[in-house]
Image 1 (cartoon, rainbow, N blue to C red):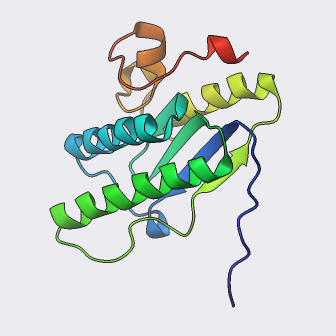
Image 2 (image 1 turned 90 degrees about the horizontal axis):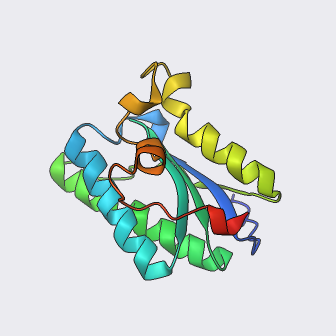
Length: 161
């Protein structure tokens, strides 16, 4: 039975979630996290995506993005998932799917939820019990946003609200 087509809305803001197959680990080393962020950085430039928050967990990722169309978001996510899967499968001598089904994309319809969503994404490691202090978690946007630590790939949210 074919799956139902994704409902594509041209809302500019989306909370995106993608998980490893059966919640398997998709980031096994610091280099894996770094490679994924480099792929995000290149894809965001290519597709002109704005990124307002992110969090990479061992078995899934969260992104808060702004895009001009749902089609652009789809191409952006296709590139991220495909390129990282190739890297991961080559590195760990694996074949097959890395990501579980399709990514989840939730449109953000209210400006206040944009801030709430960024907070939710950045505090995910605390809720998962990975850290007591979000400053200690390296793979989310909190340190970049508030400590100007990396200036890696975040865009300024001020112009959106």
